Length: 420
Ligand code: C5P
Image (cartoon, rainbow, N blue to C red; front, side, top):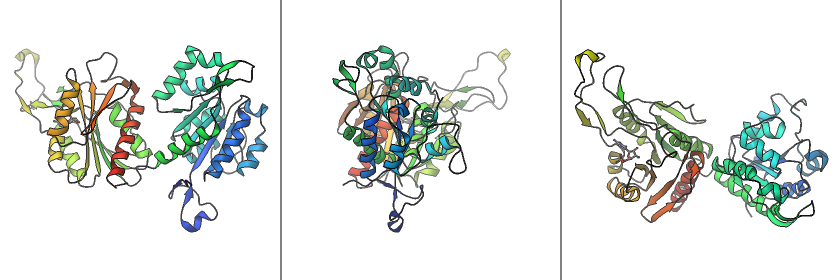
């Protein structure tokens, strides 16, 4: 039997206190569909599997099942209104969101899927979901036509691209009398998905990760630089996801417009040489390095001390090679896991394989930055993971989802090495 645990973060529960283990918390969101009665079974199953379960319901859900049912099954108060007084201090939706190791919405109506996809937060359930950092599992249930509608497909795709796990509905007889796809998935499948996310939620606990992100800037003079189109989004997503999964994360960030990732220590740098210093400083303490930064290969030989005047004519820029930070790390990796990126406009896989070998890497994330609307500056990308064993091509995904898949792969590699 599986007993999911985390350490430290939550309040101690009963007998687990003695053994120093704390059950993970699953927040179950119940929305207004006939499948709401099956959420009772789901809640029982999750409790039996060792989770602490807290339920949040929409108004519509309470027309199908009463909060008392869930309160009795879980032994916990049920949240439904944004306006009720919390049992103890604080703001209820925020505290519930913070307590969640995993949030699952089952059944999830087309309406709530649309709200979640668009970041709406107009009731307790959607507000909690928006405030939560935890992985999100969604088990849709609705009439077959609603499930088939393009707008629902698009909303589900948007959620999936952002990393939500969708437990697809089944085909069968529906409450409306139709036969088709839209029936809530079996509760065992939903509980399995929650359990997988709960495992993932702490699978990097104790791993020390160094991530680089953004594009370096190489000074021409005090106001001008040579830069590149990297937005830093992928590296930031990797840093945030690793921190969420329990890793201790240092992010060495070249200039970006992004907010600091939650839970990571950020070291800001500008040029490739500064990045090299910061990476070297963190390398000894790292178990894993992910070099997602677009490091300039060349820099102006001697940046001008004062701003260059246009009247003096076009300057001749002499460039010199920057050190290859990742290649240097590869020379002294000493058991660390090294991940590099290969952004190319042609021969992407061949270049990635060559980099894997030349720089002594464990994995290269290859992407074709020549494809319009993907890669640099975009929120989506199509990447291939290249390792010594082969290549795994991923579909077009959001950068959050790519970060997640990459860390799944890395967690597997660490587990195989016995580091996890
Ligand atoms: O050889 P190439 O520049 O294509 O390799 C890309 C990978 O190497 C990326 O992971 C990038 O972060 C890293 N790199 C580096 N130092 C450089 C250039 C690239 O660490 N000067």
